[in-house]
Length: 287
Ligand code: AMP
Image (cartoon, rainbow, N blue to C red; front, side):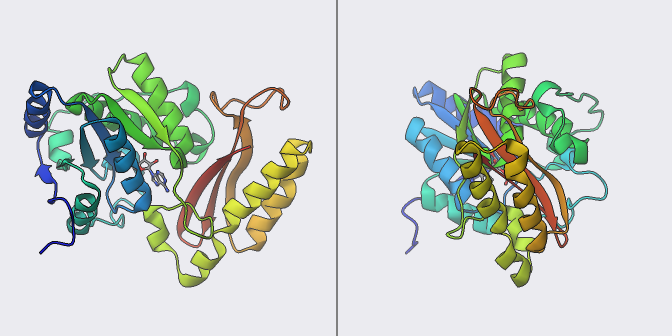
């Protein structure tokens, strides 16, 4: 007997097959949520599925390691691919269908269109991964248009990406509501990430400092400290704990991601990206 209360989700490999499944649900009057992922699923992804099922009748999880969002020197080849165990995990939470296209299905011969997001995409991640949000925006637009779900669930873990996706859907009139979901963390505060699998034991032990240092800095800012005064010791602490390169630790406007002009009145978000060993980690919290 299976330990799972639900059957394994069926797998659609083509856009046509996904559309046919969604068409049948629609005919039965059912609503649909989509959860775009790159697989190597963890509890954070499963929480997105649960949030989707709480809002809608059916959930489609896409699993596609998108070559267009990796630069040649990045970890596209090394990125974990674990479809079999992903399907077991998704059965555990009751996802209905996995959309797992090949690169050829998403980018067939002759593919020649790319979305270039500006606004929320400028700065932060783009300063260090200039190709990244173009690749994300293009693939997310394709995934959303393939599924035409009522809702698409995205994690706050990738906070700038969430802002870029909201902007994309607004600007291109894609008829899917973007739903942001809180970051799922390990007990010690480390944000769950498929890339945490790259960490050595020593790096894993050091990694929670990102969250801890941000929390202390946010507390100081809430207590009236100047932003830069609060961030300086947090930067030192992160580097002292074993991170080798701090790409950024900043406070931005929580909606536009613009520089903060008036800390007293603006909603604020603290965002960090840093390298430990061979792994680049990102995280963010509300201030
Ligand atoms: P990825 O990990 O790139 O496959 O991300 C797929 C989706 O899962 C994105 O919307 C991420 O923001 C979201 N996600 C990844 N990690 C977490 C987490 N720890 N908590 C909540 N959502 C997450």
